Length: 313
Image (cartoon, rainbow, N blue to C red):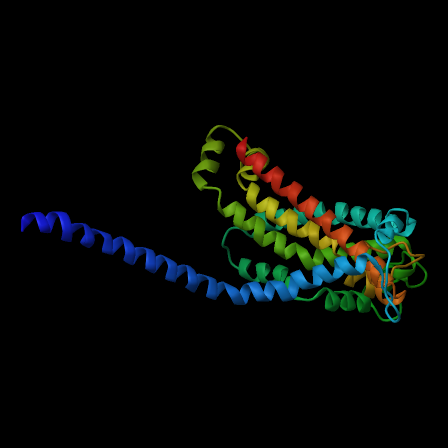
């Protein structure tokens, strides 16, 4: 009897928990898949299907109205030989190169000013962050009204100060138009950079800062040599999102400058929009979009690689 218990019944009893565990694991996997299906369907509808359609369009002569013709890689060949496309990309790179560091520096300064709780700091944080919740179109129309040469505050500012004899029309001068767009973008995005960098500053322990002060380090040295390296993740996060936002800039240029004066403020996204919906060349615009997408992926990947490299060292 003892042999039966030890040799026959006991192994079957030991196998039951394993079988039950496998069935439970399989059931959990099926439940997990069912829960993920809606998200996968949303990604397929919102991203995968439009991306696949863009690839098909980029290989075709696809007018806004009319017959579609397969042309292979002709759109890509045309793109790399298009001087207007190159001009738009160069301008976009220059715009991002100006806006990104300005936003990060301004955000860091603001983060240093409002990182500690004092009377009125909550109001200052809110005032700086509120523009982030405003759309670029609304912000652009606001600045358009402020710089109106007849009724805007900025439009008559130089005249009221006695610097000019008549109101200045900002949008008719290339440098002033570019300065205005930079101001709109900075006003709109600096709050996001401030919050991200303030979070990074809070991650640096007070004991580290106090130890550095004991060793004789000044405030600037502590910031540059201790705080910034330790808040690398926050800096990379703010820089990545700020740079991508600058590369995708469209609303402020469309509303404020209309690509002018003399087509000097046309970004890559603005060029894609004009090509698709003004010129009606959807296939060529799709090729431009895909090349620009690859460029953004390369830039983002490079930033993430630099972040990982910094962690290793």
